[in-house]
Length: 88
Image (cartoon, rainbow, N blue to C red):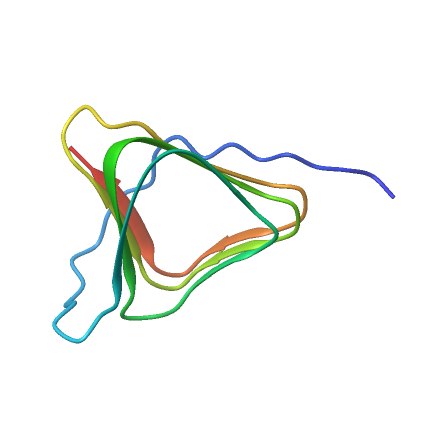
């Protein structure tokens, strides 16, 4: 099986209401088996953030970062973004 690593450096952000969302604050290098960010949930990058997934990264929610924060998503399989990633 061919192994793929994808790097996402920037995606145009969309405005999403998060009144009832679960919010997680992250920074640094975070390694996980699989990322599933549900619609309405959000990750706030408080510093440079690299998320490394051994399997898939499925983003239906929102990842936000402050100005100057670098956000990177890596996955050995699929990266699917139906939500948004925004910073700056």
